[in-house]
Image (cartoon, rainbow, N blue to C red; front, side, top):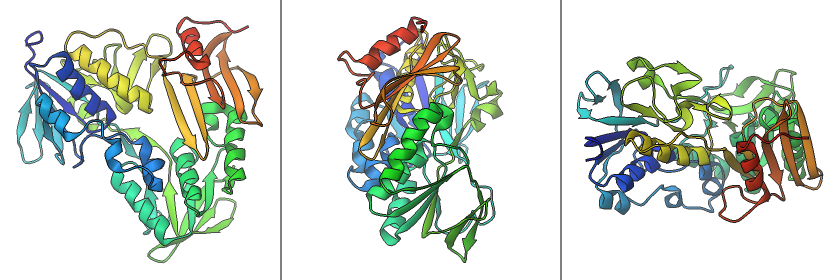
Length: 399
């Protein structure tokens, strides 16, 4: 056994949990792994839910972290469609609905996020949808087949991708956000303006600088009324207003919670033998300080890092984050992490969708966003964004 570890339990059936369970088995084949998920499906990744799966161009099976046979081959016990009631670190066990208990030597919590709910009048009407699970995506698909007018509320990454996918399916799409540009909080007004122009060029009606006051209709939503009094008729609404980390289990067990559950560089929580990774993990990064990241690459890599750490084989998790977003015929790539910046530099042309924007604070390069150039920062092949990631890691000073 790996350092006396016989049983590892992973709670969460997303990309993080699935990868972590597989990695434990690869690193320590003699350790027994149990994966518990509230969803009835094999562990799956979520990015296709707003893109290819939503448009009907990618089957759901393509989103699986691994086929069922791989879990069987590795001897992983899958407890799908199973609700965890309580984490009991004092007894080193998980208590399930129905009072069944699952013991562990180490446990990884990878419960991801829960959807934020719309809070204004009419949000409980039929036809008001959101997106987190495959069933959510299927409901949006069904609404898109039955209707022709959609309103998307919120222009973060999910909102932008859903708006693009619905427009590509031929629907009339209106997208509403109180900000002055899509994704401005993450990318700034310059790149946010590029995203706005991209959507407008494909026929999305953007309503920026205005919030939603209420949703009107009968049993089913029929129109959206903004705070400025504008009205938009619709057949359905999709809310893309983000997630909150699903930390209730950990909070109830006494873990230290801030912007998620606090973990150190080895993905350890404040509870003994309890680890956390993915969307819920507010981790201590050696370059960026304490951060929580909700993107695919981090979910995949941090799950594997946590698996190694709980086996006693880990290294400090210092990944320079990267992610991408597909919208219409364009892909936005991003590398690094910049919560705030005081200067940007633009290489190429924003107007021509051919650029690299670097984000700098106090003279230090923190992040870069690119479209049309820069390459893939995760590719084995050399690329400009990969070079930028190395510069960020080295603490590059921008002139």
